[in-house]
Length: 140
Image (cartoon, rainbow, N blue to C red; front, side):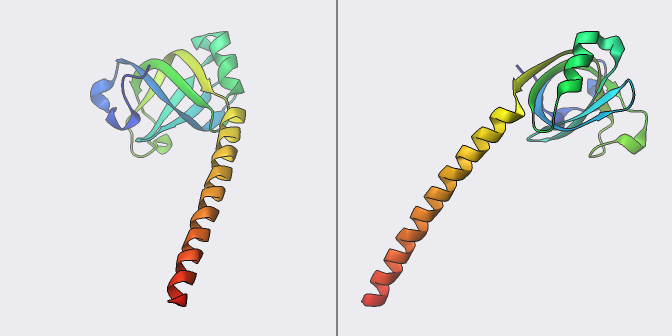
């Protein structure tokens, strides 16, 4: 599984192989190069995928959508173009070895919908209890 989080990465990690898990925050295809902004609970990291990384890896990266949960393995490289920096990070993942899809967006949406329904039910029950307590207080 993962061996670090986005927040922990810095220039001392350049050249190291890392495994990261997170959500696809954004995917951009710039005519032969795909950029993925990976988001975890601590921050963001840019992932660069070239056709040279392998046809199957590039094809898989083309199918990724926002909020898909993935695990990536790759080498940390220095960012040289400052206008593409996210959260002032100075590094990115290039030389990608692997993308593993852990949860597709369709499954995530279903889980979120179920959670929202449960939350609405619990919130309604809480409000009902508060109204009952308020009515009891007023009657006293």
